[in-house]
Every structure is written in structure tokens, then in C-alpha cells.
Image (tube, helix red, strand yellow):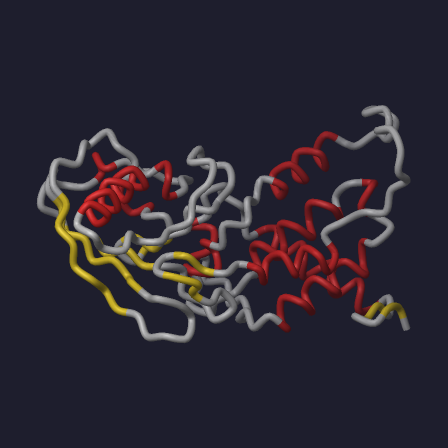
Length: 257
């Protein structure tokens, strides 16, 4: 396959970026999208040019690092597959001679570090605000010492599937992080181990989300459409319920009134 690429190049967050045109030849249809970018970088390096910076780690759809907008869609899911990350997208979903536009996530809380790499530290700070439980140190407790209803365990696992890739933010016209935050809040609120900080958690995490500059949710649904782990919008409704309860109980970001 021969392809024409339009790749976003930007030195850092303080400089202007632009789409740069590249042609790449002899791409195997069986290669992944990231392997195609590897081929491009090998070509650029051989020509004495600076390679394109892009994020990746596991390349198995687990870590969520491979965050790219491909032809305007987070993770490029408009090519036939659903619930995939960029590293799981294969070149057989493109045609010989196609033009592919490759950009980073576009959201104010995700500043561009270089080229296709963005800083998703805002997600880390949301987690730090409440994504933990109080537990005694020492050996691990016996797994069945605290019974958990299967329905709750299944829902908690569904929420815990979120890998924090940020596709929900990139796809949302409002740049909202509600799906990500809701998944983290719901995961712990459904389990007995998460009950101690349950209401303080939702207050702190939502407040941190707002402080980071993420937009509000208007139920457009783009977040779930591009989520590689198919996190449901139902969790947003659940988080809103948790937030209302916490507020009525007098919890604030500075502690309970």
C-alpha cells in the first residue's frame, strides 16, 4: 500500500504547529497503525529528518497510551472496528492511495508536549483527588472475607475497565472528562472497600475535574462511541447521583460541613 499522510508536527506547547505532508510506500495491510508510523520514522531518520513523536507502550490495547485522532476520529474507529485503541487498528482498513490525517488529542487540559504526544497529567490529578481506599497495610486479606453481590461486582469491573486513554475527552465537543471520572468514582462506590471515602471521593474528584478545565457533559454520547473499553454513559448518571447525595449530606472539597 502507498499512502499520503498529513501528520501534526509541533515542537512544544509554546510553539505553533501544522500538518506536514509525507508519502509512505510499501505498507503491509497486516501491519498495525503504529507499525506504519514506525516505518515512517525509519524513513525520516534515514533522510536525516526528525522522527514524529507519538506515545505508545504495550501495543496490546491495554495501556491506552496510543492516543491519536485519525481522520478526525479518536483511535480511528471509523474504519470498521469498534472498541479498539490505535495500536489495534490495522492498515487493511485503509485503501491504497488513501490520505490519512493524524493529529493529537485536542483538549485544553491535554497540552501538546511534542507532535502527537499530549500531557494527560490532568487525569492523574483527578485520580489523586479520590481514586483510592483506606486499608490497613500488611498481608492481603482473604479474597472472600467481604461478600460482594455479583451484580455489584460485575458493574464495578465494567467501570474498572477504563484505561484512561482520554478518547472520551478528545471526542467530546465540550472536552468533558465526565465518562473517565464517572468510571473511577463508580468503580469504588460499588465495592465495600470504597465506602469509607465514598462521598468525599465524588466531591473531590468532580471538583478537581472542573479545576483542570474540562468541559461539562451535555449527553451527546461521543464519549461512549469512541471508548475502546465501551464504558457506558450509565456511569455518568450514577456519578451525578453520588454527587447529589454527597452534597445533601454536607460534603465539600474541604471536608464535611
